[in-house]
Length: 85
Image 1 (cartoon, rainbow, N blue to C red):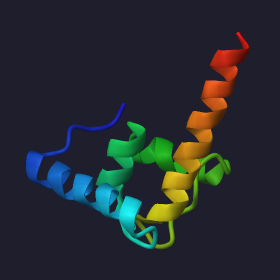
Image 2 (cartoon, one colour; image 1 turned 135 degrees about the vertical axis):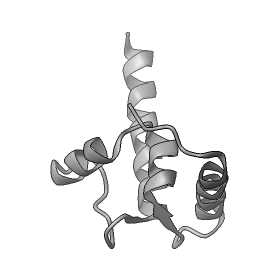
Image 3 (cartoon, rainbow, N blue to C red; image 1 turned 180 degrees about the vertical axis):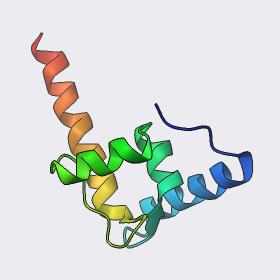
Image 4 (cartoon, rainbow, N blue to C red; image 1 turned 90 degrees about the vertical axis):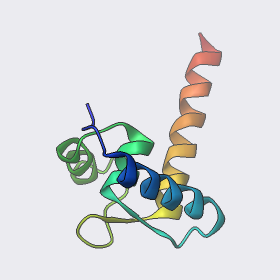
């Protein structure tokens, strides 16, 4: 479970996510990743190591376009699974 993010940092993270939708080269910090995925820091890095999530481009920074593309792909796969049942 993701940690509770203070309001000011949550607002900044949300701005990063919104900017990444417009400019995919935007860097997303750990707070933005937590907002998007709902994962904790250790879970995020575990999934990166396992190849289940894009790797960071620098410590604590992810390429926004890669993360959003991954989330879109994951959502599409989940929709296919639901439709098949």
